[in-house]
Length: 464
Ligand SMILES: [Zn+2]
Image (cartoon, rainbow, N blue to C red):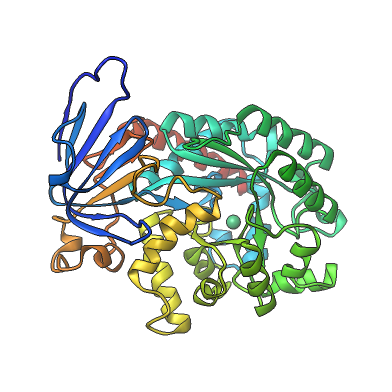
């Protein structure tokens, strides 16, 4: 990839020209796919999209994208990045959700602020290298002085667009919840800290690099009161709300037994539906729930690898989309995936839909749409997820000259999903080159991974 840079003209915003892309997938309203395409960027926003011949001839920074397919940056709507420290833990390798959680909670009780920061850097590096530019992270366990600030610091260091979700757990085992009492927090402290985070960090503006989300962990780990109060707090500040819902059949049974309602009824009762809400999984969402979410614009984070890993089932994504439910893609936590690669996740979404509902249940282009525009909508954003004038300058490129694409160049867009390229050549976020020639530019990754593995070993030893 040829890349030239000159000094920006004084006074004006720095400009960037991407030219000669073999294919440019816009995901705009017309879903244009442009051969020999390019982008012209001023500062952090796109000002022109089209064939290279119709764009300005030069800019402060010029990237020659010959041989590359360029797409909007992928949007990850669900993750627990700290779990990168507890991948493939033997006791949790072969369990369903509740058993898996029960064996991991006691390990996670030893997390420290440094572990949160280093694991978030590692997880974000993996996402950036696999085509993601915006990610949410759902951190719901805060032992030993850990804070959401530790994740936020990591996002700022590595340069990822970030929706930091202030998770929480307040109902421990003695009160009939699933988590051990040692890892739950007091509800007044949760709400006060959430308010502090919103006031300190939340940016409601267009092109925001950082937003804060109110995110109690799940109906089986927080009280009705906290769900209700969290919604009131979120709506007071105009921030999004996120939780886990209807993940598997045990989750449904818990909801019926404890609350006498389905998860969708419970969500509606507590104010947890609307365009400002998205729920992870919803594998077992019933027809009433699908209709309700469609009517109210309540979003879903679809996490196919995690759903397969924990044998939770197959989310009815086609049915949801036909009912008008906004659907985004999520890799879910690294302890239940355990590979957080966005383009790989899009492929699994397509394949799993077909296993469940037939060969026309999801096309490659639909999988890409869910991973870009779909995720943007779920996160409540209209400034990312497509390449068109006025959108944020977030885009990625994959090299069509690699073995993964060989033989599929007649349809490089479909090949992106069918052929499973694992790594990007280029990742640009907010107009800044974050990955170039497949190498992360914002951070020296080697020492981070080394430290991450040292910390993971400490946790593994404590777990014995
Ligand atoms: Zn999750």
